[in-house]
Length: 205
Ligand SMILES: [Zn+2]
Image 1 (tube, rainbow, N blue to C red):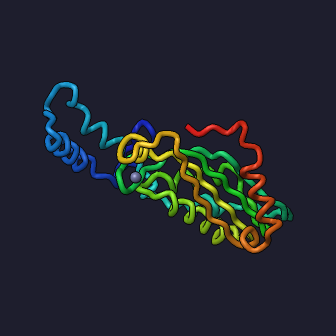
Image 2: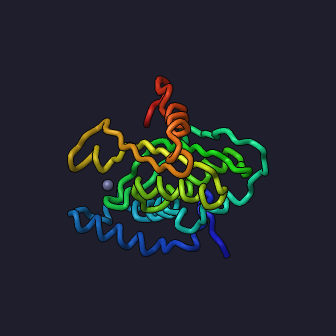
């Protein structure tokens, strides 16, 4: 039997009571009363939220790249500003931003929404931005056999804005550049201009 939450998260892989117990522990440990009225539903709510935020752990992002079209198109494909939310694995605080994915096809082209699904799947797990960037780029190289891949991610890390150094407004930018985008300066310049060219209407959350 499989239970689905209101956000279509398969919950059968997640031990919700265990999360609830742990959240009660944290509340008690910081000096709260977990039985206080306002906190009554909190452990159960957080358990369901974690199931949702980490559902990528039970998915293989690769499946979204298995259905490709064979297309004689050998120019750059770029999807810019794919928004995502992820969870910093060092602090368990969210980081959010935009991913830009460009590739130079070698006969294999995927539906544009599939790239967004890959980002979503890779983001929904305890993550670090650098690994997320590299993972997405490698998936495109492996599954599409693309001649070149460029993934750039820009994100705001709440672990830097609400705690620690508290630097609101700081944006972390990471990139993974493969194949022709790495080796050919003109191709690299072209993709970077496409990604960063006109930033006037780009807003991070
Ligand atoms: Zn962090």
